[in-house]
Length: 282
Ligand code: KIV
Image (cartoon, rainbow, N blue to C red; front, top):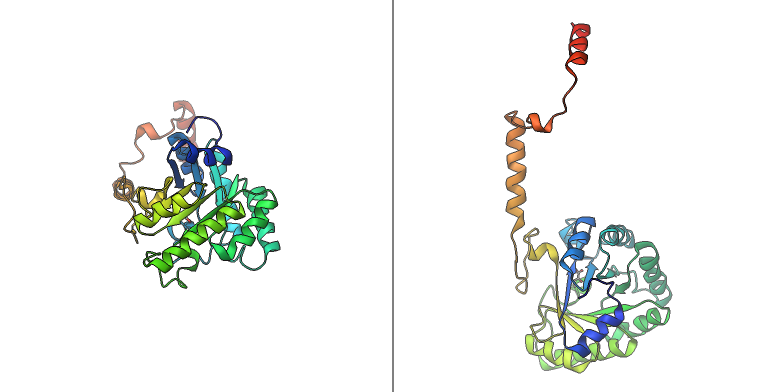
């Protein structure tokens, strides 16, 4: 997009203009800066940080405090992209009041521009209430990682006609509730197109094929920093883990062999002062 701050109106407009949206995740200040420099449209502080940053098995243990902490760090580095804070499991599921309160915290304390939450038809009233409170909401349907165990694991969704119909109904319910865009995760590519055609707001795919309105990937997956589990829909644009590991091994070896620090990494001391000190110590 341009080198101006991206708004939710720009995101809505992109679909009318037929321009694909580029979205990525970030969890800290250095990646906030990089996302800004790359000029992506949207940066998500995803609760995927539970896995790729915190080493958890899934996203269920991620809390509001974790999300706010990481969102603040990204916001400090990332000026132009629209910044979305992901609502963690159980921060919006118990009551609509609590959902509005937590969405407000994410904006006020995290400093993001919008929030994202998972769920379709069942969560449309919650989405509607948060939007009415003045908070822009991005939906997330198809594979919803927070409830993956209820869906039978991290599996493709919308396999048969009935399941696909439900996903289209979810998309329509979210559109009606006022989302400015939605994520569609892990569905067959033809269903991705059907969903994108069924609603007027941008549908951003992750494992939903090419015929949606934009793409998102978990950054640590696409740069090869997290390789414990790589979903089929991830393309690795770089493989930086071995590069980092090589640097760490070289550092370790040079410290052990007293090759680091060399003269250029060491501070000098005036000759006179050194002589004086050496005399005193003797
Ligand atoms: O948490 C996350 O990173 C996400 C993306 C997969 C969209 O929800």
